[in-house]
Amino acid sequence: MKVVNITYKFEDGKPDETHLGAEGESVLDVALNNGVQLQHNCGGVCGCSTCHVYIESGMDDLPEITDKEEDFIDRAVNPRLNSRLACQCVVQGGQDLVVTIPKQDFLGH
Image (cartoon, rainbow, N blue to C red; front, side, top):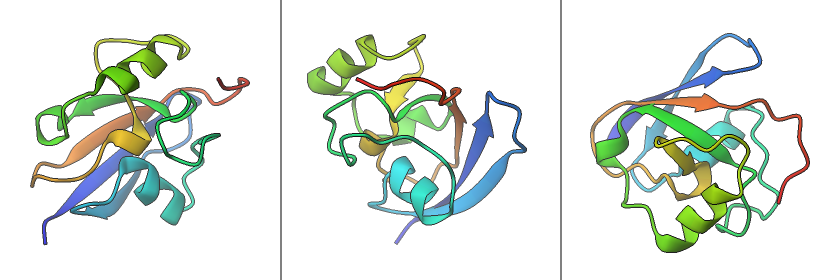
């Protein structure tokens, strides 16, 4: 089983945190299992945009973005080219990930 480091950076100024993610776990799962605050109104089933993150590195080792995920990202606050939903970013390769969590002071979709 592949294990990678996932480094979480925070736009609200909190210090970076790095946690291990195993193959098959999502960026959201690893965050929640390690006490990282990341909204997830739909429960992590790609039904909203609240777990929106920016993938700073490691994007090539994540699953392809789906049309459904892209639709929800369009509804997120400040989407960028490197935007993804943390619930859909499942560890599958051996490349470490760096993820920026936007400020979480909004009401989600």
